[in-house]
Each structure stands twice: as structure tokens, then as C-alpha cells.
Amino acid sequence: MAAAGGVTAGELLAAVWSPSLSPLTAAGGAVIDAVPPGVKDWAVSLFGTADKIALLVGMALVIAALAALAGVVERRRPFAGLAVIAVFGVAGVAAVGGRAQATAVAFALPVAAAAVAALPLSLLVRKLRAWEDGTPEPGQGGARRSFLRHLAGSAAAVLIGGVLAGLWRGTVLRVSEARARVVLPPPADPAPPIPAGAEAGVAGMPPLVTPASDFYRIDTALIPPALDPATWVLRVTGMVERTVELTLADLLAKPLAERHVTIACVSNPVGGDLIGTARWLGWPVRDLLALAGPARDADMVLSTSADGWTAGTPLEVLTDSRDALLAVGMNGAPLPLEHGFPVRLVVPGLYGYVSATKWVTELKVTRFAEDQAYWTGRGWSDHGPIKLSSRIDVPRSGRPVNAGAVTFGGVAWAQHTGIMAVELRVNRGRWQAAELSPGISTDTWYQWKLTLDLTPGQYEVQVRATDLTGRPQVEDVRPVVPDGATGFHTVRVDVKS
Ligand SMILES: Nc1nc2c(c(=O)[nH]1)N[C@H]1C(S)=C(S)[C@@H](COP(=O)(O)O)O[C@H]1N2
Ligand SMILES: [Mo]
Image (tube, rainbow, N blue to C red; front, top):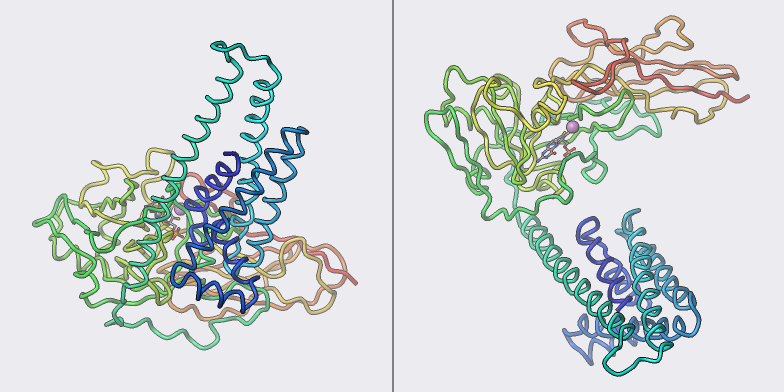
């Protein structure tokens, strides 16, 4: 029962946090890899297409045998069985280590599973011993009844956990398969080419275009909603001449535009990494809104996600010439589940909390005076234009470097305005112009670099940017609440001789 509890807990946690690699699938994969080819062929010829089932049954038998051993030794000597459980955990970690999809979360799962298994093992064995040690009178049986009650309770928990894990895993797998079948049309309006030299070419800098797997994720969803693309609909409602309904097929048939856009979180501290650039494919929101015909006195669009989260975006920003997109693609693939599959909003120039609704299902045309979005009224401003900022990526703060030519590199952004200049200063000395790479567009971050000659010692290096209207970055240090942090990113550099 304890082993079943541990395995179920591991699978349940995996269903939520690591759908592509659970302890059981890792162990199964490890067994498949370890089996010599001859035995594999023999198994396939014996079980045919039932070879996966056979593997699972085999694993269940091995786990049951080890679990029985754990129970027997735990009954003889307290904690001895826990050692057997620990072996389970270590084997699970080793199995995860051999998998290509291994992540920190996946490594933690077998440990968590073993910890969960340890509890009922020691509890149930203690109850069992109490029952055995006592001299149970017929009809009395307090210890016996207590043992059986705990056994039944554990069984119920395992059953419920198992059903939940199976259902959730099934949904995620089904939606992942549906996502894999989504064919994105080529953009009618392709992304402008990335200008030569946009990559500053400094070793150790994050790439100009952030891979989806490295893209920061911020949302209130404990587990990302798994939406069936076949039944997804977006409704445009509120102060409009006519409500509009859009299916994914409708959306994919529209002339789509592809744009590089850098999105950022309002909670990104100065120098933080809650920011990333992707090539988004989508239909301009202004074209959708034009179909609906917003009322003259409307000034906000309240977008709602499948899980009830909302963002309030100025209507003007969604209808002006910028490419606010109803996005279906990220870096050439359908949106990942965590980034809003099947459809999200991407609005150049606004923090995510007022614009970037993932798993979007409704756009309500309304007024700021009438509707509040999720974070508005929770201490955050109802308007959230991204603040001009810059960051030093290389060298990393506190990482020692060799004396001589030290190359600094980083990014600067002022979405929809663009960057004119980036400067560095050492120990609050004079500002020195960095070499600014071209942005992909004014809607993306710009990379920059500057090589300084530094003698051994400790330095404080700061960066500041100026946008294309000539406005300098704000030096005043302000926190992320209520509408985004300001201040200069400052790093400490240790120059060794
Ligand atoms: N449905 C939903 N969409 C959401 C959020 C959310 O909590 N729920 N968070 C927003 C915030 S605060 C940010 S910064 C961006 C982050 O997008 P990403 O996770 O794709 O990087 O998503 C936005 N869209
Ligand atoms: Mo955010």
C-alpha cells in the first residue's frame, strides 16, 4: 500500500508539473534502454504490440516484490523498510538522470514519491505491530480495527490519486497530441528579416530570440489549462455593433502576420529575467475588432482566459498601427501549453499583466471606468506601459574576470519606441557609449556591448539606455509595484590579476 501510495503520488505530481517525464515513465525508459537487444527482440516477439503493457506489468511485479520486502523488514526492524523505500527513490532519480527530458522537477519527483511512501509504511507497520503485540480478544480488536481502517484509508487515497493522475495526464496528452496536429499557415505578412549584426556576438549572452523552452512563464494557473483546439472559441462582446465568434479554424484561415516582439513582466526587477523575445504568429487584433465595431465611447478591452484571469488593455493600443496579435504561433510552432495554447494576446509595449492573456476566450469591449482586470485593484496600476530599461548580462555579477580587456554585453528595451543609445559607467565615473546593435524592430530588445580595459580590483558597473525620442532611462530606484521597477542595473565585477 505504501509503495502504491508513493508511485501514485509521483505520477500525480508529474501529471501536474512534469507531464513529459514521470517517475514511472523514466523507470520504464531506463529498463527499455538497459535490456540487451536480444532480450528486447524476444520480448517483442513474445508480447507483440502488448510489449508496453508487459513492461508495465513487469515493473508492477518488481515494485510489489520490493514493497513486500520493505514491509517484511520494516516489521522486523523499524526503519529497515524505509531503507528499501530510499533505494526506490535513488533508483528513480537514476532513471530520470538517464532521460533526455530530465528537468530539476523530474529529479525531485522520485524523492517526493519515496517520502510519501515512507509515511504509510511506518504508520501501517506500527499499527500492524500493535495489533500483533496485543492479545486481541474476539469482538474487541481495537488495534486490529485501527490497522484495517488505516489500510482502507490508504487504499482510498491511492485510488483517488491514481484516478486524478490518470485523468489529468490523459487530458494533457490529448491536448499535446492535438497541438502536434495543428498546422500553422505560412504568414501572409512575414516577419521582417533580422538585421545583420543584431546579435552582438558576446559569449555567454542570452540569445536574441528566446527559445520557447527558456521563455519565462508567469501566470496564476497552478496547472496550465489544457484546452481542446477543436472546441476553442473566442467571443468578442460588450460595447460592439455585433458580437463576433471565432474558432481556431477561422483564425488560421485569416491573413496572419509574424512579428518579433519582446514581452516583459511588470514584476521583473531591474536586471531580472522575466522578459523574452519570440517570433509570434497571429492575426492583428485591430482587424478582429474592426469586424465587431467597437462603440465610440469604449476605451478598454477586457480579455478573459479559459481559467477566468483577466487583463484590461487600452482599446487604442489594440487598434493603432502597432501589431497587437491574437497569436497562435511562437517561434514557428503552435504556442506551448504553458504559453497559452491554442491562442493568446501579444501586445508590443505593454506589460503582460495588462495585455498578454494566455488561453484567451473572450474580448469584452468596455470602459476602464466600468471594468477591473485581475491585477488592477490588487495594488497594480490599471495602465502598464513597459518602462525603458537595460540590463548587463555579461560578465555576471560577482563572477571574477581576468584583468585587461573585459567585454560587457547586455540588452536594452523600449518597446514600440526603440533604443537610441546605451552607456556604461564604472564606479560612478563618466558615462561611456556602448556599441549598440540594431534591434529586430522597435518592438524588441536591442543587444549592446562594450569592451573596457580594467586593472585588478573591484568595480561597480552600471548601465543606462536612452530611447529613440531622446528620453533617458529613469535613475530613481522604484519597486515593481504598482507599474514596473526603475533604476540602473548595477553589477559588481571582480577583476583578478
Ligand atoms: N491566462 C493568463 N494569462 C496571462 C497571465 C495569467 O496569469 N493568466 N499572466 C500574464 C502575465 S503577468 C505575464 S508577464 C505574461 C507572461 O507570459 P508568458 O508566461 O508566456 O511569458 O502572461 C500574461 N498572461
Ligand atoms: Mo507579469
